[in-house]
Image (cartoon, rainbow, N blue to C red):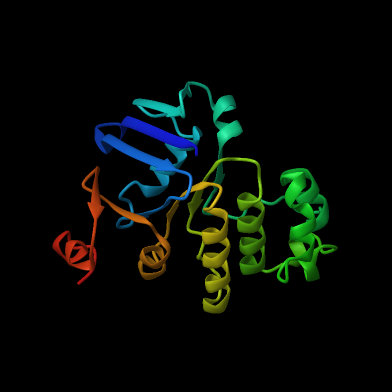
Length: 217
């Protein structure tokens, strides 16, 4: 069992406070669904946790190890950004060998979605195809925690169901935090749901609370 603890997260842009003294935790088996309106700071929060966005302040640890440098973050946490990140001119098979945990490579080669594209180069794939492969690759790294920013974006409904199954399977050995505007699928897959509203995080137990905050009608 691994445990990610991040507290006192504060982030501002000039005079505007985006994240105000937030606390979030995630352990092996958790799928934390992060909801919020456009511009509420969801992507910023994930970037701060991963270490590519500097916070005004945060305290972060994994188990009993305090994380002060991004080089330590890489050991424990991996991150799926909103935009496609795989480089062009490389075959998918080559990227899997470079990027993924060696113990998972054989299974990835046999994956029904990836198998047809193993010898394809990144630029030959559609945006949705790239997205699914990126998610599979991120989920099959050695990291103990995964941050997913808009994993369902640009993906067909039938493929979303497959992605949800992948996430649930990998959550048996990882902790996962994800955000997506497809809130129904986020709620459906999450063990805990949080709403980022007015720079603060709120635990959400039902849709009535989302209506109360004006997130849905």
